Length: 204
Image (tube, rainbow, N blue to C red; front, side):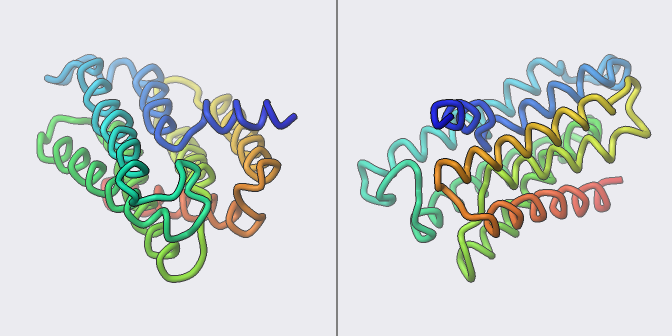
């Protein structure tokens, strides 16, 4: 059971979730991305570099430099500098795609939702308690897919159901690993969903 919890925590790491969501968004809306100037594949590569590879590299050098005690970042204070790094990369990514003016809202919305959620999570982490970023990421995904059901070209309802189930499994995995308590998990879901809804409200 613990091994499965570790596998789920890795497969659905917060760094990976926005990329998963964008892949589904592109596949579910083929005509939306067919006639844009930018190649969706290149857009995805840009997202992976800016929101997965660069943040992972930044976190990778923080422990040797003494900025964090462990890669698990169990202490609330350990998360402050990685939060700042993540915010920097997400701000850069969102600004790039929004300024282009050609990226569909379906593409920029989950990125903006993740950014809004990270800002909220950062403030709560600094001022109050540690929050599960796994839960935040899953909250963004669930909220995004629910919002896209009425407008997507293909049926996203199965993805909503699957994502809700995965969100529950990931939250359970984090509890089993004693990485978070129930409050940190539930608050993470809430922050992710609220951040995504705020982003959709501003972009649509």
